[in-house]
Image 1 (cartoon, rainbow, N blue to C red):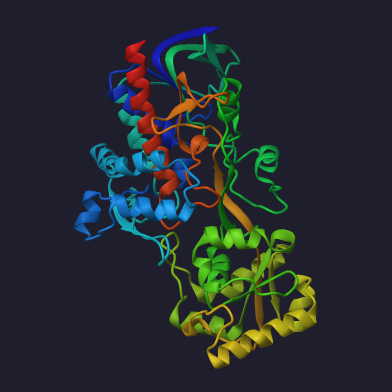
Image 2: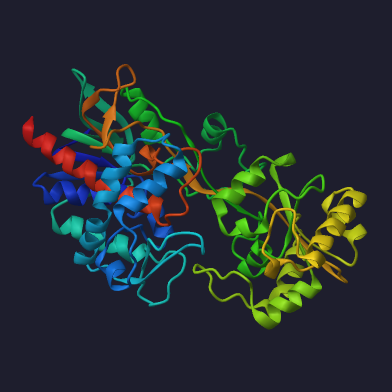
Length: 484
């Protein structure tokens, strides 16, 4: 067995783990990080940037949102079913974390809302190309890894942790396994768990959230994010939390084709469930969490977005009603080709038909129910009086001659929750909710601050919580290691 010694050992080198390692090292602790993958950054490499509140960039852009206002919005949204002190501690730190990242060389492309009804909190990382998009944050995690190494942090890559060592009720290290299959033991004064949730563990998803992956949810599965850190913490005596999915929605099989996917997310479409009932104001489809929630309670946990060739022509002439900062350029002249390609490849979730009766047959819906729903909707479009009060500018009747439909299911960026912590990122014991000495957790493993629905109105929140809770854990662990 290989033996290592450190003040602090961090399990995983994603956003929370890197932030924790850097912060602990900045506070004078020696740090070792165990990471099961061959690289650092974890799921953070998939993202575009974190939340900030009151940053210098926001002030320069005249964004007036305050910590007090954001905190109230967050707590009202969650109905105070979350740890208010943890939320406020995180938000109090958020601007400083943005500046901390800037000191490492991180630049921001801009600050943005994710959709019109959200706040301008999303600090979009400027990638090397200068053009924002998926994986833009990769460069930020590169800078963070470099900063960690500069501070003397030691990374043991391809070395997954297997067990948290507890002696006399205190966390004293971690057992792992290196890529050669040899056991590794890191003896430490403090342990930080930051393994990113359980999004790649269908069994755990079903057990803890009720969704069945591949049947009624099609969430992102980042290889290796299987919940081991959460389970290790539970085995060490940690209390658990409410666990759920960071809900969004999507058409299975078209995640890489936004020409096909995004036009169906527009407020001018008509949304129906499997039995032909309209169930939401389509303007809400801009909020992926709310729409995912609504779809999740429909029959068969799916829903259809439908529009016709007249609406397609409008999009081709005028562009889409809603634009995406993630994919800002959707060439609508290529839509017919893109959807036909998916159909030819056998995707069972996109449809084109020359009549409502043909569409009903293809999507498995009663033809009379579909026709009645479209007739009722069209009447509202003509009168400009909609049952769900959709704005008149989005009320465009569906009259053909061609009809398009996409079948959406719940999806998720990942999982949320698992390990109960306090505002110092100390892991709490299941028996009495008192801190387990020397044990800390951060990131999505411990992210239970959203209640039953991700707070999408303050975008960048999950990455923001990961970075800030990681810093909090790093500070707490360094202080504790100095005292024992």
